[in-house]
Length: 253
Image 1 (tube, one colour):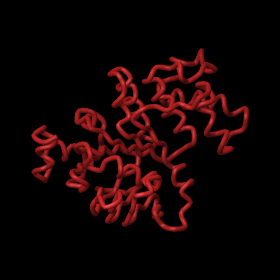
Image 2 (cartoon, helix red, strand yellow):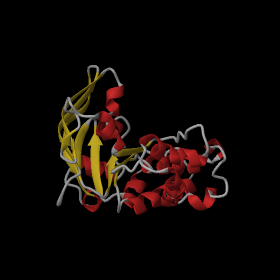
Image 3 (tube, one colour):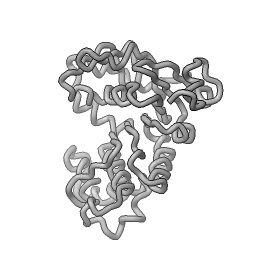
């Protein structure tokens, strides 16, 4: 990969109890691109993603060895402020989890908690982030309604807007369209295309067609190992490794 890397992964190993989940992962992730992590179910995609914001720590049985450098800082160093690391990462899960409050307050929550905006600035910020996720025109007349009244697809875009409102550097998306209908999935994908000029997007997906549509860079994982990584065009059109060729052609799944 040419150019600077925003995330550098060096000899990363993760165990859950005695199960070796990630095996000696070493790679770089480019800034302001969409990097898709692909591979069969259970290959370690989500565990790798959870390392980037230290959510892997939430499992008491997890043990991590190796380094993950974000903007040059080893986020697994003993003196790291995990809260600051997570503030850099907007997280979009498989299913949306809007806060039990209004549409407006969901987006305003981050700026209020972190004190990053004055009261009179909150309204314009809510509009800004709802526009960035292509949701504003659908909800501008109902901002004070509970977020739970939105469709699942709208809730997912609202969660993306809420994540962006804390001004992260990266968006971590763990199969973010797996619970959505095709129209909502296209809306999320379009948002990612527009956001990658400002943010580094790391997308875990089991949908090869989605990775082909969106990815600039690709990680292919299999049984906890990073088999191959590189520009999306090379991975999908002329991969070096036989296993990668078999996966992208549908021979293995």
